Length: 350
Ligand SMILES: *Cc1c(COP(=O)(O)O)cnc(C)c1O
Image 1 (tube, helix red, strand yellow):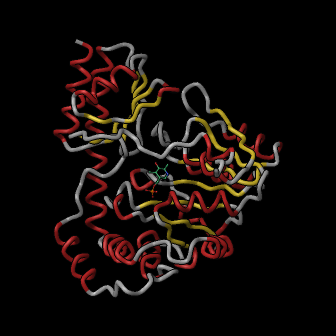
Image 2: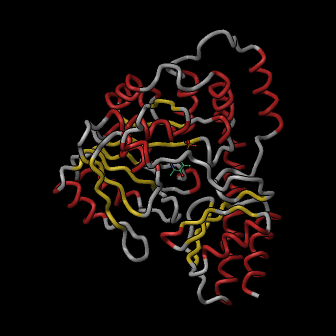
Image 3: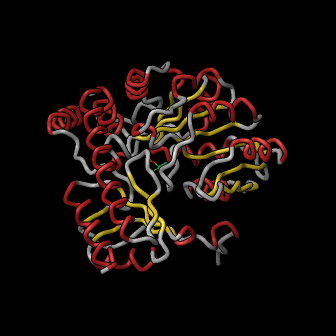
């Protein structure tokens, strides 16, 4: 009989909000379908893909399209099967077993998950009372506890708050650890360090096509950094990690700059409207606190978060519940979806 080892025994498959929910505001996906013209273009190119051949292991065209959109050198870009795969590779390969990695709390849960699988030592750095990241404290802990890799999201999932670029720059320059800066939501905000990625020898930036670009189904993400680091990422990843259909689709989308920018504007407008709706409710419901968002979701804190989460599910609306924070994270949706979630929260309090 095979015995599962310690690191596997307690694990369960990732199945968030299983079941059918007519309104899905739980995964921070885009509520927009790709424009008809781009879909047609993708389908057209897909028809001539040699499906009997392996994909391009370097995803050259795709990385080129990313580099062109963001104005970074193509040699500084590696593609992943979602940025999730890249997080896994970084924690597996840039750390030796037993070495220390640091995360902030609260933050994206996959960082500590993969660090645990890599059998590394986890240093968790708590954020302040209002979820602010104390940069001096982070620098001190990283340098005192021999942290080899620091990973965090900016803007932050789940809070939606963003640390200004200048503070991140100061952090990168003050630690010897490799800083993995997950900018999954930076397309909605303007504090990116992408433009300077090649200037540091200890910075890797992660980006994704799953949030702003409406391609969560295709699983495409990027790591960006100086050539030495990116070469190492490419050497460590599995050779054919991004399939050909995803490569051509994401390349096509990234080259349609105007359509991408338009989609981002629509998503930000939706989030602003969701946020004002929630703030209006908060003025009448003193226990409801809205965290000011810089991204495509709004996180609210309230004592009854667990009950409201269930009430929303029963109303056909899935949002993300964080029990430890007593918080709900609500993805910006269509005008109708935003109205439905606001109405349901209001109904709960009646
Ligand atoms: C959604 C998300 C990701 C994962 O993106 P994929 O490219 O779809 O794997 C990574 N980091 C953060 C903070 C996210 O919220």
